[in-house]
Image (tube, rainbow, N blue to C red):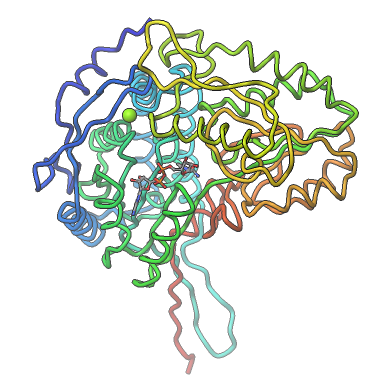
Length: 495
Ligand code: NAI
Ligand code: MG
């Protein structure tokens, strides 16, 4: 059940795993290491080099040099696309190994990593490689008396700090457009989940990405992350994680006048009208709130259900959530893996406690789950609360398999309720009446409104947030490539 590909075992055995800087695998200059855990077992999975500001300096210097000298930024765009497609091919070839690594390090079901996280990252890489080939790099502008053209050129070194919920997928979403545009990158993965990023670097090396174009500095947020965010050598910065840290990143970048893209949290709503197939919607929302053990920034955690179908919905959703198979990520039966850490489990359970103390009622109890044979893992049962919109569990991001149900009976009021959240990442509207669904979808203030679905991702569909959920243009859309190209206008007066 838990057997690993020999390549996975070999990758994990070369401890401590090293930083990837300027095309070389090196230990942190301080010699320090840290441990990443397997959250399904609550045990150490691997020792990893703990980079800090000295290593970040070296990585940024390597990326600057590669930008100037490796030819990556200046090669014909088709040649760059060939290399990125080769990298995508390698990701596909190593899909099983990557899914094993991701499942071990994050806790997520191995099957989900293999079916979604890994292939989706490869597809995103292909999408931006192709888009770059078809993007105009030189736009003549008609101005009487002048010869004018605007060039679209890469910026230089782009920094990326990623969270632990979708480490590999987010590399694809974040780094692919930057690379396709001709930039070089320094990546700081989350300390809880550094492994698949290191494997990505290994594949990039094999694909022939020139040394220094992709650099990975593993380490902690306050050391490696902060050093990267404030580095004056960056030309762009991108961060995915909590709003609190997002503010710190934006402050540091502001000081250096480095443009920043922030993808932060969410408190997504699902608005369910009374003309739906209740059982089908209940199943979809049960799946949405338990996806990745609920550690999904855009997932549906506020369920606004029309009062006429409320009881039938609750009956079905409680039965569906209660029947979920909680288990170890490598077990093919598992629907719901552990959360990423003891810290995250404490946070989720703490929210349930605070919610109930604040007057909410539990429709499904939730709490700690014990998985036989994996007693030390960080498992949590799904929970469903109901109560007042002011309850802490209805307002704040919990990041666990917990939903908050509120009945409604008025379209305008439900829109107002959804929009009262300080977040603005993604919501969904469920109705058989498409006119109504479209009307409501357009009035919900967020980066994304989905209709009769939640968690809808495809490269080409822009994804991003507003308000507390982020700023700077989002990811996955065709415009994201332009975010990594700066304009340079060349003009000459005609005699
Ligand atoms: P976090 O925001 O602290 O971590 C995200 C990344 O930022 C990690 O790579 C971390 O090393 C880095 N980081 C931390 N402190 C930093 C600093 N001072 N300077 C630079 N980089 C720094 O998220 P955390 O603590 O792991 O999770 C806390 C909560 O944040 C979660 O419970 C969840 O609600 C939310 N979150 C949201 C995510 C999203 O996708 N929107 C992803 C992860 C967490
Ligand atoms: Mg881990």
